[in-house]
Image 1 (cartoon, one colour):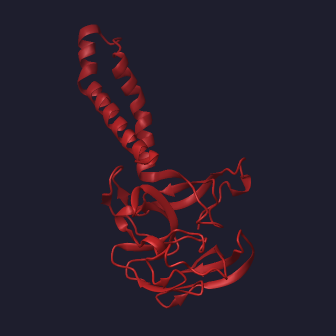
Image 2 (cartoon, rainbow, N blue to C red; image 1 turned 135 degrees about the horizontal axis):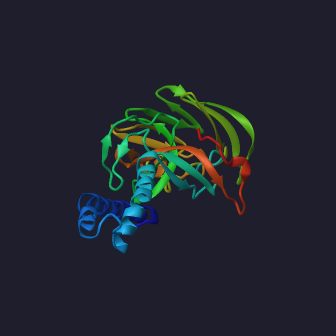
Image 3 (cartoon, rainbow, N blue to C red; image 1 turned 90 degrees about the vertical axis):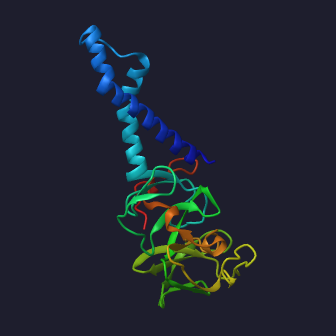
Length: 264
């Protein structure tokens, strides 16, 4: 079980326990103390601790569970949009309010759009969080040939952006479903059907129709991303939220130029 999962369980339990003690004190214990000792009577150490802690824990619980959650970028699969060491905020309510633990959703608000950068539970191990870009919505027909993406007959435009990355990667501006962002491509690299067996015949030459209730995800580092081409689509229940902002970036030292960058 990952640290994030353990933390979420611990936060939920602590909120419930301190909240129960706070409510018990408001409804019964405080009146009993006043009846016995007068207005100046103080609660015991445990009750006093829970009553004082509950408002703080409740605020953290509500913000983290239903508003925004911090997330650290662990890999280079989303370069150049997100770098290793970026700390981001994830909007938790755009796609509906979900249970703090588990996979249930109790209020529908909205759905992901093509081009959104999304944090989700990895289908192969739900205790691990991944971040990718939404390429295909339920029912979309995806075609990816010679590094060019087409969805429902609409082909993304690519223009060279200069610069690049390691191993011969080149940077391009991609306009996809009205969203403009940069991607990395290694023009001469051939997709490996053994490491990414989900799409056929290979990750650089395939067509696929997204099933109902599922989402097809790809990294902006197109030739350096472990994504839906390798392990399949993401169920709606595994979505956690939309990445919205880089609030800190650390590469041995703060990278101030990236702090405050909006994610799109």
